[in-house]
Image (cartoon, rainbow over all chains, first blue to last red):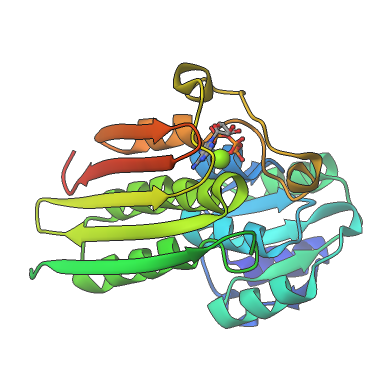
Amino acid sequence: MTVKEVAEKLDLSLLAGEDGMDREIHGCYIGDLLSWVMARASSGDIWLTVMGNVNAIAVAALTDAACIVLTESAPLDEDARTRAQQQGIPVLSTEMTAYQAARRIAELLP
Amino acid sequence: MSSLSLHYVVPGDDFTRAGEASSDVKNKLKKLGYNSDAIRRVAIAMYEAEINMVIHAGGGEAFVEVSPQNVEIQMVDHGPGIADIEKAMQAGYSTAPDKVRSLGFGAGMGLPNIAKYSDTLKIETEVGKGTTLYMTVLANR
Ligand SMILES: Nc1ncnc2c1ncn2[C@@H]1O[C@H](COP(=O)(O)OP(=O)(O)OP(=O)(O)O)[C@@H](O)[C@H]1O
Ligand SMILES: [Mg+2]
């Protein structure tokens, strides 16, 4: 399943980084404390968070996450948007809570 | 594979640029075809050290030596130093101010992450003088 397919199924809106929409998704990680996420998120994860700053983009890049999903309509900073666009890391938005979104993702992933 | 010497200046208090040095090293290692697990460990350890320099020490410098066997990273700052290194190494210990915590930092996981993901770690620190981290990541653990 690709980022694009999950985005369509969950009705996520794309805020930046469309170049990365064809990446395969392997799992999901939830967290807002960056150094915690840094240690635990895996390559190819959908990362659910409320952190829409430029440091979150750096963490997604370094952990090789497939995309960031900002839950509960958490805002994306302007410089974070620019960075995500440059690096081709999809940042998507949803009104769902992390719990609600994770339940839907769990139904989609094998 | 050829060897590589890299040098970066990490600006202090600029959160928008923090992570540039570690991202650049990650990209260069990828191009060299370095072991992907080693790249991930270098990226994590170096990012945490880079962020610590920005948050706690007003910036600093990074020196990176890449060889086929390992990546040696030296992170040098002239910040306040670490008074109680044993405490600082404990997961959960953090002196990060509220302003920085609201950005997602301050879990007190940075130094424990560095220790976990590097293969050797040496910290030299003196209160009032600064801190230097020496870390090595083996290409094949
Ligand atoms: N380069 C440094 N100069 C001065 N103090 C430092 C430095 N690096 C770490 N410290 C001290 O050690 C503590 C623990 O560092 P650590 O990286 O583990 O956690 P943190 O930076 O506070 O939070 P996190 O890394 O989880 O965002 C810091 O809160 C700070 O007091
Ligand atoms: Mg830290």
